[in-house]
Image (cartoon, rainbow, N blue to C red; front, top):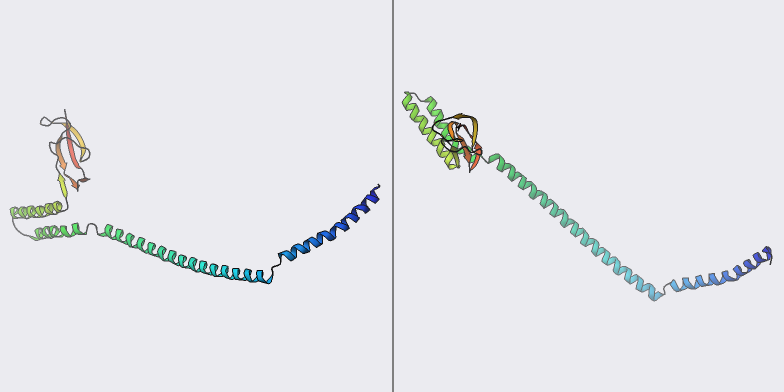
Length: 196
């Protein structure tokens, strides 16, 4: 068979098969089309799904509102805590300052007092006792380590010198007392340490 005859034969076969394919597509379309019963079922199901969607959207909106309220409450709580901490830092020494006011008053009265050196000295001793009482009340203790073994946590060595009355590495002279607050060193004592 030559190519021209073969081409004609192919076209003839295609025209015979095309109607059968078109008919099959029509039958498939008819099968897919719902009947009136199916249409009612689909519409009822669609209405049910729309109700469920509306309920889900309402629940989502409610949850979103609850989330926003919770977030706002958390922000307000955080701001309250920050304010409390700020106030605590600001007024932490208020009680201590109030306790020092009588000491300051005594010092002012001592400066205005007239008299001999002995009476001024007695006034200063009373003021010092007042001050020591305030320190004791707030658990502030003086560190006077004369004769004690040098402790770098409580003492600051200014220098070392030989001393006949003290052992090696012992505080032989206190130049300035140290202080602790509730057991924590707030100022180390400035000392000279003996060496042999």
